[in-house]
Length: 200
Image (tube, rainbow, N blue to C red; front, side):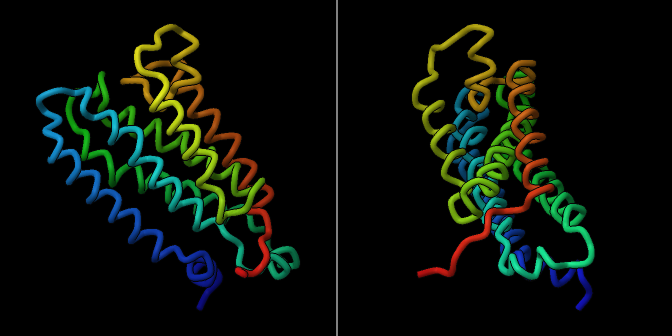
């Protein structure tokens, strides 16, 4: 096996790809069951929670199974990390977007793509700080809190801190989500996931 194939196998990328495909199928099924064509606001659970599930799966794949070997490798790891993170994020957004087609100005594909970027960025940063096993936790806590506590909140500041719940192309929401993705992605690409002990 060549280097990229070994890298993909060690990060369980085939399992991650299958899980992302399953998330996309679930999002399509849920969107159909909720009859979102009747009311675009019914898309909010899909737009907020499907990217969160995808980011959790991406975060689990950021685990480094052999940190000692990684640190002593001759070739730099950052290109593989960058390819993994960017590729999985783009794939997740592309697979889930058909669940919310139509009404792009409300809760359509732009909002889903934005939330996928933001949640993945938070998860990548958490993988560096907490390790890949717990990388889903900060994004889950934040998105859940915003989902439960931001209804009826308006204003320019809300578009930034409540970015997972914003419709369409809100500039503040996009700035916050892109900022999270760039910062979290850069931390992961440069530092890698925090080493973790064996499962006990």
